[in-house]
Figure 1 (cartoon, helix red, strand yellow):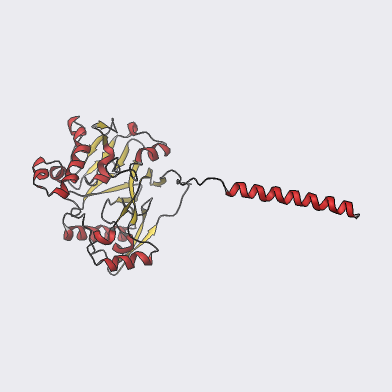
Figure 2 (tube, rainbow, N blue to C red; figure 1 turned 90 degrees about the horizontal axis):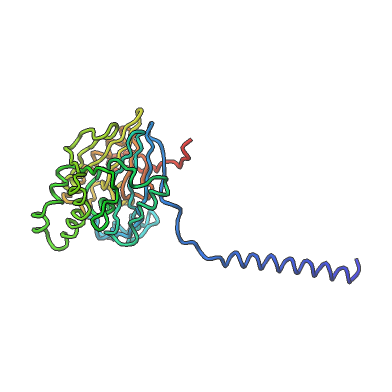
Length: 321
């Protein structure tokens, strides 16, 4: 090869390399998206289609909220590669029975700031509209479970009937209880009232007594303790079972190994711990699927029990084959 030809080939390679490097530099300079995929996950329970819908995540100072020494909580979080404050999921669950569209909890709406309140957008991404929902069942009336019901007095689910345990309603919707509550607790009553009362006024709230079938395939299961009328919902179809357990657990890294550990949000600490152990034991014995409001999204999995502790086995990813 002549010197001139060699120089020409070298020039071509040099230009090509520069173009490739320039292209790589341009791609690396693309702006970061900084948002996740839409927050929904779908699977089948028998003939029922169940969709977990994310309302977002919120940072919780769990080391101060759990009723145990802070250093123990911090150590347990560290073992799970976590830290406080703990980024905590808020999950709701939609059940399509084929004849009814049933929602369990609604997220926080605007009650907890911009980190939450993503339920409706994720519901739409999952292929549903709020107006399609027939019935909404509330595990309990803390703001991150009922806040999504209404906005400035307007019904966010105009065709839905709302249901909750009558004990829960009597406790949180009582003006007398609001008036005698401590200042730091009044906001919890006010959040429940602003969310629920528009449906009460529209005659779209129907409370229930514990432990009854409220929709074909959906039963209530009294699990009092976290609140006065906290309720688990049992979904059954074609021999398969799903327990939607609400706030029986908040911090997986601590409370599976030590289910006796309660949280400051619990109205009755002792009863909350008993309810958790009872429902967890039954779920493990039955091999039932479990859906939890505050385990990392989608909050679905199974439990195994060893002595007095539990192992959480997250549900396998599925494309619903």
